[in-house]
Structures are given as structure tokens and as C-alpha cells.
Length: 430
Image 1 (cartoon, rainbow, N blue to C red):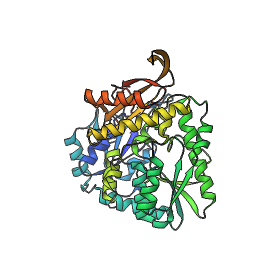
Image 2: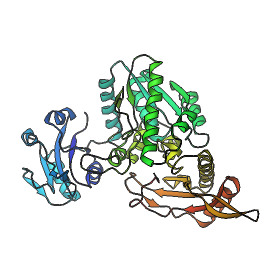
Image 3: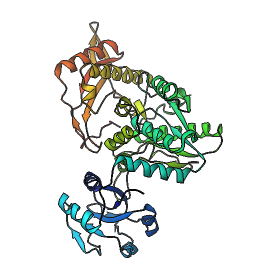
Image 4: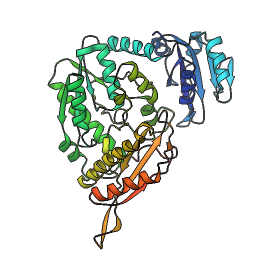
């Protein structure tokens, strides 16, 4: 490791990510780990200069107060205790530390250097990937989204032709998405890319599946099965590359935090997974992933493209997926993206998409009563995907989008605009 490290131990706080971001803003690398980390696991992290014991309202789990292993106190590493009464630390705080307190602890007590930057992070991860993988091969799910693209670039830098990229068209992609992925990665970047059209297979598995968690897990599980089938056609595939980032892990639940939703690359993985995971971005927030992509030399348009969830349009076609509603989501989303680009909002708004619920409302078409679906537009801004605010879109732009959707998308008679920030809402509907 070329960077000094401050470890944050999760002892029930809801503010772990806040402290992690504060530390990184000081130019120091930080990682969040579970409260029951062992001495050997701490030593394996390399260059740990300080430990923050971060307690909070979720400190009691299943009737028991979570505690750190007492042998950690004998490591001789400076410790700061935050709202953790069992701690033997000399330095204790009852609430979240301010920036000055953190500075004093990190730079004066821990003697840390401010050497957290993307260049060093990439060098560290490349070294770790090479140690983990050796001369074997990695299979990567390449959706073409920001996370998988950055992972692909990182793995290519680390192991070159030992990386095999697989793009699976699960039938839940945005309009022309798969065609674009093939064009960019196979034709322009000359990646070792395998294209699999599994759309009918996925839609068959998802028939009559309405529960959001079950949909995510069905999609995630089927993804792995497809990869296993592709791996059996190849030789020496022992690893699965994943674009897991830190908000995915937080929202899928930790030992002291409740699950918000499972992510296909966290909560949806089958228990009998045949691969060892390679996840070089799992400690990064979304804005840091983009910075990593820029440092790796990826095109700006690729790094700053619209975020797209692993389950794709499956979590935007609410409830049990039907082909007519799936097509309505795909077509309305394409219109939204076209009109946002036309208005210059594609460079201003972090994420925007459409959703089609699984119920109909009454309307009028050709002087007759009709029952058709509605399209909900969502446009939000965020830095790290942990919180989000609503974009106040100009009324003329919304009217133009509405007119196009009602005229060009079948089985739709209403368009609505979602005004809900995160929290209490999440970015996606499911």
C-alpha cells in the first residue's frame, strides 16, 4: 500500500460514510470495516495508522451490544472512540467529530501523510489484483455502465488479456444499449468481449415475479448462471470481476445496519458461487469511481454516462414485468434522454429516468374511455448516491417530454413528475 490508512469500525453508527468522506476530503484514505474484525485482518490491510471506533444507535443487535475484539487495543495503533462506551481508548467523543478534531487525531496522533489520490489508489489496487489473480483469468460482467467500465479499465491495466468481458443482454437494457456496448468495447477499445443475448431466458424467469427483492435476486442469480455457462466454455476462469461500490454494500445491509435493498452484485449472489470475487472499487463512492475512470484514461462520455442499475429496466417496470410495460419504459426513457440532451440537462442532472407502475388509470383517446398506464419521470442530483435532491426542470421542457411520450409511446395516458428526495425515497423505485 502506498497510502496511509485510517480504519473506521462500524459499531452501530449511521454516520460511518460521513466520517469516511471527511477523512478522504483531508487527503487521507479511509475504509469502513465490521466491528468484529480480527487482529490478523487489520494487519493484512497494510499501513493502518489509526482506528476509529464508531458507535451509534444501532449498537444493539439481537439484544446484544456489539463490541470490538479486545486484542485490537494491544496493536499499539492510535484509536478514537465515538459514542462507544465500552472503549478503552484514551480519546473519547460522545458525538460525530468535527473536521478540526479529525485533523488533530489523523495528522498529529496518527502521524498520517495526506497521500490519498486516485493515482496512488489505482497503483495499490493494480498490485492487489495481481497478487489475488496471479496468472489466472477473470470473468467480468460488462454492462457498459460507469462501474463496470471502470472495473474493466482497472483490470485491463492490472492483468491485460487475462480479463474476459461478457456483455449479457437480459432484455432489460435501455434502447440501443447493447448495440452501443458492443460498438464501444469490441470495435473501439478492442476488448476481449463475449456477447450473450439471454433476453428471452431472463423474461421467462421473471414472469409473474412481482416482489422487488425477488426480482433483483432472480436477475442477479440468473446473471451468475449465465457467467458460469460462459466460464465452462473457457479455460482457467477462477474469478468474477464486480463493479461493486460502497453505497451498494451499505444499502444491502451490514452487521449493524438494516438493508435498504439488495444489489444484484451483493445481495443477489447465489450461495454456491463457483468464483472468487475481484472487487477493486468496493470502497469507493460514486464520484470517486468517476474520478478513477478519468485517471485510468476512459473517455469522458463513458465516465459521466447515466448510472444504470444492474437489474436494468426490471426495477423501473414496477411489479411483475410485462412486455408492453417494459416497452413503454424503454421508449419513454429514450424520449426523456433525447429531450434532456436537447435542453442541455444531460450535463447538469446526475440521473434521470422513467418508471411505469403496474396499474392503469382512466383516460380519453379518440373520444372513448381507455384504461392505460402512466409514466413517472424522475430526475435527481447527488454527489455520492447516499442522498439526492430533485432537479427543478423547466416547465416547457416537461411539457415537451409529456407531449412526446403521450404521442409516441403505446398504452400510456398520463405522465407524472416525481418530487421525492432521498431520503425518505431511494433513487430507484424498487
